[in-house]
Length: 79
Image (cartoon, rainbow, N blue to C red; front, side):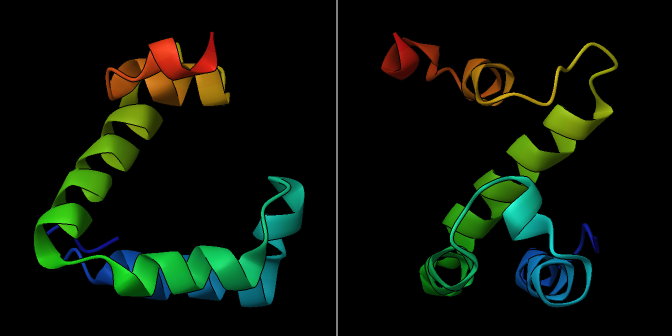
């Protein structure tokens, strides 16, 4: 990802969906995912990129929805 350009998140995800089949690995609707990312305004793109960076840089992440929710302070929504 290009950290200076939050819009690069859309391109990275679209490529991962198209070429690597990652939407199926993570069990998400690829069209809905790309459409949702495309609709984000700039501040939302920056916030999402921040969460993604923190998630993947955490050596203790378990790659779960619970870990991601905890990183953004939304773990209460999974209870």
